[in-house]
Amino acid sequence: MTKRGKILRDTSAGNGLVVIEGQQYPFMLEGTWRSEVPPAVGMTVDAEINDAGQIVSLLVVQDSQLTKEQAQAALLAAKGKGAEMFSGLVARVGAVNLVALLVLIIGWIFLNAVSIQSPMGGNMSFTFWQLLGFINAKNALDVAMQAGTGSASTGIYGLLAFVCLLGPFVRYFWKDKLAVLGGVLPLLFMLIVGLIAHSSLSPAAALGGTGIDPNDPMVKEMTKQVSQAISIGAGVYLSVLACLYFAGIGVKDFLAAKTGAAPKAF
Image (cartoon, rainbow, N blue to C red):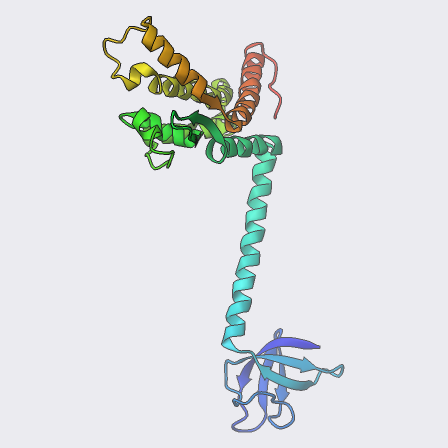
């Protein structure tokens, strides 16, 4: 069998000595040492031991191999720690909630929320996160017309989005009956953003918003064209489903707490 050991004494003045799993073994240089470099104190070696408990061969373990093994051991330890932390998180907040959070993040960041058909025949698509940048800009309509690069800063809206993502999980860290209403935050945030975005892309906003008569035939026609040019994407529908889940559970548990019934874990 092969085991890992360390040289305690070299062979410059007789037999060498290697320690393996706390036990010391003498060895001779001739017939045993398999490396080109001579044995030195502190060297890490792979030792082959026969059934009689005698050293058959010793081979130096290169520093590169030791570094690789240490990195692998650290990676395995990190994976184990991460798996332990994730298991604890799942046990505390529930797997369904984490899945719903993942769905919400995907819907907000990766899937198209709005598509705008431009008068030139092009089609511009934006994620919900990009919309946050548009409404944070001074002139959201101008930003939207820049082919949807998504380079606009989300500003305070990005911070609010992060807070709302954490809202459904406040109940697990703040033991107040109002904490369950944190589940309503993502849905409320989406509704507010939708209203602001709709207002920002309106003809009134494009024309400066002052002295605009909404009953003017031209304004009505422009409003109709803008409404027809805007279509809702899959990101909104998927996000709303996740938001409704969180909001429904939060409201249900809040009403249960008011009536004295114990809210169910979800």
